[in-house]
Each structure stands twice: as C-alpha cells, then as structure tokens.
Length: 252
Ligand code: ADP
Image (cartoon, rainbow, N blue to C red):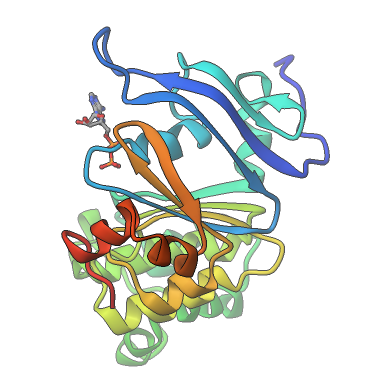
C-alpha cells in the first residue's frame, strides 16, 4: 500500500465539496467548512439535508466526491485507511453487536485493554446501572445481534467501543437517539469534554446544555451549510436555526 501516512494535522478542511448518490441531484452542494483539532461541533438540520452523508464522507466511507476533503494537508482519498481508523472512530446510526461477550463487543476482540478500561468506557457511555445489574460480568454473552440488550443498551455499547479507543476524532451520528433524555445529556457531556478530541456530532434532539458546550453549531439545509455559530448567536439571529428549534426539533 503506497498511500501516505497521516502527518501532524491542525484541522479538517472541506473545500467545494459536492456529492451525489446517483447521477441526479447532488445531496452535498459546494460545501465549505473547517473543523479545528480539539474543537467540538454539532451539525443540525432537517431530515434529508445531507448531515449523515457529510459525516460518512469525512469517515472515508464514500469516495467519488468532487472538491477537497483534507486532514492537515493530506487529501482523504490519498491516506491509508488503517492509519486513518487508528485516529478516527464513528458512532453510527446502525449499531453492530457481535454474537460475543460484552467485553469482546467493547474491545472488538483486542487484547490491549484491561477490564478496568472496559468498565470505565461503559460507565462513560451511561452503562453503570447495567453493569451493577449484571454484577460487572463483562463475560456476559450478548447473543445474536446483541438480542439480550435493549436498543438503548446496544447504542451505549457502540459508544463505549469508541470511548475506549480514545481517538483523535469522533464522528457521532445521532449516537444518543435511543437514550432517555437524562442519559443522553450525560453521555453528550462526556463526549463534549473529551480533551484533545475533535468531535463532529449530528444531533436531532437538541439538549440545551450540550449546545452550550460546543464550539460551533453548523446548520445544514439541502446539502449546504446555511448558518453557523454558537447556540446563542444562532438563536438570537432568529433565522433558520431558530425556526428549526421552534418547529420540528426538540430543545430540552
Ligand atoms: P440527513 O442525515 O440530514 O437526514 P442524509 O445525508 O442521510 O441526510 O441524506 C441526504 C439525502 O441523500 C436524502 O435525500 C437521502 O434520501 C439521500 N440518501 C442518503 N443515503 C442514501 C443512499 N445510501 N443512497 C441513495 N440516497 C441516499
């Protein structure tokens, strides 16, 4: 593999990015933005506005875009996947649970982590009550597709998997959608307080406290970023974000 390694980087830069799934209308349209290392970002917008697609492009899951997507000075398509996934992890809308133990599901079968590491990650992901209930038995078999777990528990196992690795970049695609408001708020607080970690989170249910913690909120509509700023800036502008919070989206 002759793809380059990832050099020291200071930001992810998206320039003139366009992407379509088929030959018809692009779902990302000439989009420009920057994500600075260590900062926390939330992307909001109506369903279908292109938020997940943008995250998946940054996750190097979709090629075939036009424009640039750079980490530092390196174009994503030129970097080595393995190196990239050493520094970046994604919590997807889909949860993938293996027919294996709780510990194996969190470590992804890696031997590099202790039980204590696994318990810490699960606790950060809001699983402390669950751990008590099963008497901290990390060897609990989760069954096929994790069918011994509820939807929210599966989601928290996926989050713990990412927290355990302590990556430089976390992409978070509605990772708290199946959690109750209180647990979601707690997990989001942990996420937004990860030092030196760049977080880009797509969120539907907007927790006021979480919104106050992030450096920048990006508002997408129809494949474009139409507003950006802090919660207070966007709210006081009484523009699209304000309407979004008044109409569809919940603010808690
Ligand atoms: P959001 O995350 O804001 O809800 P998405 O990025 O999921 O938006 O979707 C943007 C647009 O792309 C939508 O019109 C959606 O129907 C379409 N789309 C998403 N995923 C696919 C796919 N795998 N194949 C074809 N079209 C898709």
